[in-house]
Length: 205
Image 1 (cartoon, rainbow, N blue to C red):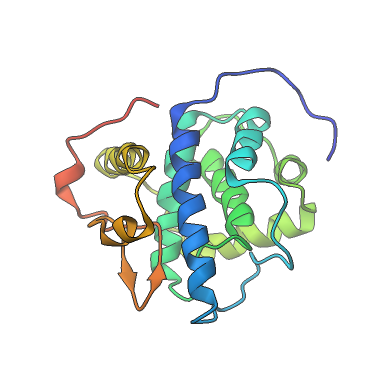
Image 2: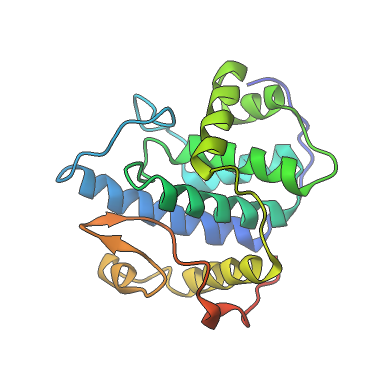
């Protein structure tokens, strides 16, 4: 890792919410992969990273200096990617690369000022060439659908808030959540953007 600014900033709630969700989804899909092997993608590492999902997200937030809203939008992008690429499930081998890529794409779309790919590569602990490849693959995986409406944004905020309340829930309860798609034991951290029931709930991030 290159030397980066070490300014101390308060971690927004969205980091805790999102990391909790992705950690549980990754663990569930790790178990499912033993039964139903998943397709290996460019996001898969050879080994599980030693850093936790929360610590990795905190590192990204600390050094990337992107707005907290970027992390909600990054979650929207991860969900869209998971729905469009059902054979690539979020697990402990790919969640870190998917995170750094989704935040990079989100920052470019959301923020007026953002760091380049080389900087994000240093933050994420990968090479610039790999960062460029991951970004391109992610964009094609999304079908370049980057726009996020206010209603969609608040829907995902609401679900992250619900995730925090469910943080002590069992895996069975997670599977039964109406906002999670579970088909053939393939778990994604996603739900339909057309779910109007959650639009009225909001989370301060």
